[in-house]
Image (tube, rainbow, N blue to C red):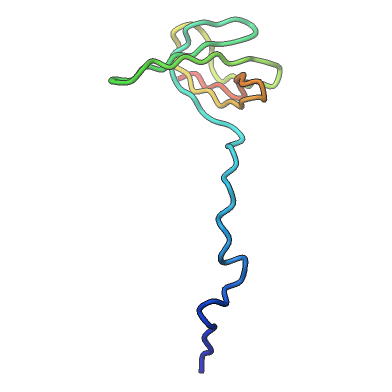
Amino acid sequence: MALLAPAGSLSAQETSAPAPRKAPASDIFSGSVTELSAEAVTVERTALLRETVRRTFILDAQTVVEGTLKAKARVSVRYTTDENGQFHALHIIVR
């Protein structure tokens, strides 16, 4: 014989709102390299019927680059955003 709980007796855990989603630890941005220096790389993404998006990523000693980074190369950049809104490249894959 199964016992059923009264309708208003749900625990607090079952009735609470879902926890807010945290920002991802990192994101990915793909496009073509438009500018390149020892300190930063600028990548531009264009899509049909959408605005062109351009982002500059800071390069540092922790940035891992797979392939040869050069102007016009197609790349995917895994990055984080710091508290100042700057993008820091973690991993760049040249396609």
